[in-house]
Amino acid sequence: MASATERQDRYGHRFGDGSYTPEIVVDGASSYVGSYRREVATAIEAAKSRSETAAAVSVTRDGDRLSIEVSGGNGSGRLLLIGFDHNRQTSIRRGENSGRTLEEANVVRSIRAVGDWQGKPLRISEQFPEGQDVAVILEAPGGRIVGASRLQGS
Figure (cartoon, rainbow, N blue to C red):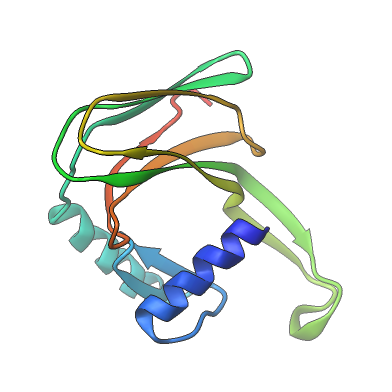
């Protein structure tokens, strides 16, 4: 998916470490090797404790449409709509894991920018993206996540 490759490339330039898989970026501010579970968990907990929410974000579904709302607040940001699958199996055909089937969780299927937020309330209607479930994030110009929501009841 081109949008994921582009995002990974931006992270690689921001952190100066290239890009690798599996990589986890926490709060748009730091990257970790995804298999280093203890280090990742510590980083997530630290990000939760210093979270700086610029605005409340909510998303609801009506058929094949989504309603995304961002409250008024401080700052600006780009609103990203992310479609993902809860669980997925991938059969590996080549490389060091050839012949294995990997179990994956929360696999992103689509990412797209759906609007710019400038501190004023914003309401957007969008088509449901590829994937089983939806998350919406509000990303500040520097990459920090300053608001987020997940579709409830999916």
